[in-house]
Image (cartoon, rainbow, N blue to C red):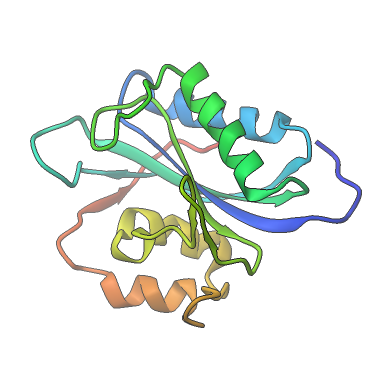
Length: 172
């Protein structure tokens, strides 16, 4: 979607571990790009990771997008949740298998704390499966609440027991 030139840089994480995982991520990218007031600018490589949490689940594919966004953070969140639902994700499936998960990581230089949304994403700095693809497309980007760069956060947690493999497929 072509924009007027205004808007803010938004970084979005994509993940999924059900169905054709790569096709789900690719469909997510197309759906985000089709949103009114959103233009996808860059996509990371795709990474495969084991589920981190209680129980066992299929491996996830993870990637990140950079987009220019002219809509408010809560409006973008609502749109991303609709995309997840269209892909087959059931509401309230935190830590459950899902075909598509879309998370707002950073939204311009904003720090957002609402009932529905926290930006920067509250757990992203603990997750190599988020930081590695994010560092590919936004390594010099600073977290507005700490001043740390994405690359610095990634280097700090690299090798902490999260096995992450580069996947052969591409987002687009």
